[in-house]
Length: 382
Ligand code: MG
Image 1 (tube, rainbow, N blue to C red):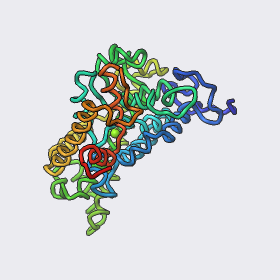
Image 2 (image 1 turned 60 degrees about the vertical axis):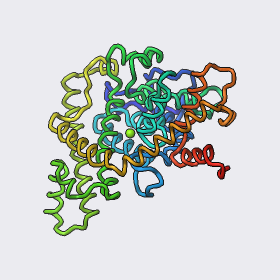
Image 3 (image 1 turned 120 degrees about the horizontal axis):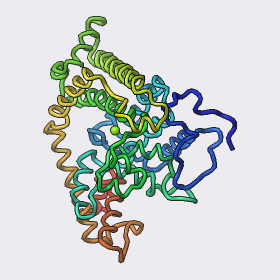
Image 4 (image 1 turned 180 degrees about the vertical axis):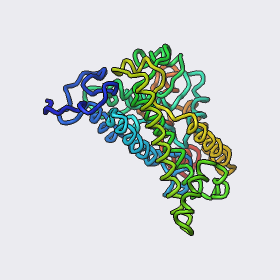
């Protein structure tokens, strides 16, 4: 029953309107007091995969320290930045929130290295891609409802989750894969969540990098964007202790990045004048940084890549993690009887079994994978 709420009245005509959504694979009655996208957000928050994000790596492994970002806190930061941006542009905040909270659900343990190793292991069986896995989680792996597998989310939410996808995979995804084949755009909400993701990690990785001691403040001053605001903070608050000076700097960076996205995108939208979400899909990307800000964020990313993501201590963790994922996959493929019964598919062809193993490993948290590795390979462990 709809209680008479009009969820879409404050949205621009080019936003994703809840009432005009393309719907769910399994038809359901309206959610009543919630919009369709609020319902999606709630299903995501109640999912098992969402709780697992708490113990999955962003850059630092979960056991390296309690204050580093995990996939969970990262996703919450993306949602927060995304909602602010969405509201400024009069597009659907609820859809942005749902996509932001779900965007990393398919991540393996140990961050990107887990995906790369699993992709290599799965090469003969269709590969492994975390984006596609996020979709698989919400479309089929979650077991919560009586009527359907997965969370039965709206088309627009699923479209936002599937950020990129190879042509081969797109061909198997029906309507959802079409945009990768005919090169059209997703909703503005999906485009915006991508940028919110970028703003979130570019800023929080500076904090985590400095906290870990792997990068120093002196190094950070090589990045123009950072140095500019750090000087501004130092001038306003002479002698401010390091951590406060850092946070005063990063809040200014987030503000300037979000303001840039809003101004640039508002101008592009005004120019293209889309009258509906269909016009948005046919237009070039309309949510973006200005060229000047794009150059600054690219320089920041390059710095983080060279100095943090490829730091030798991060590399050591990465190599150890890749061994764990690889060992687990090989052991399960060789002796499927080691798998929990739910993941054994006796008599099925090998690629079905491999996919089940990939699902099992991808669902593991960092610490579960470490423990499972010990359980499989150490005679002392039960
Ligand atoms: Mg992310």
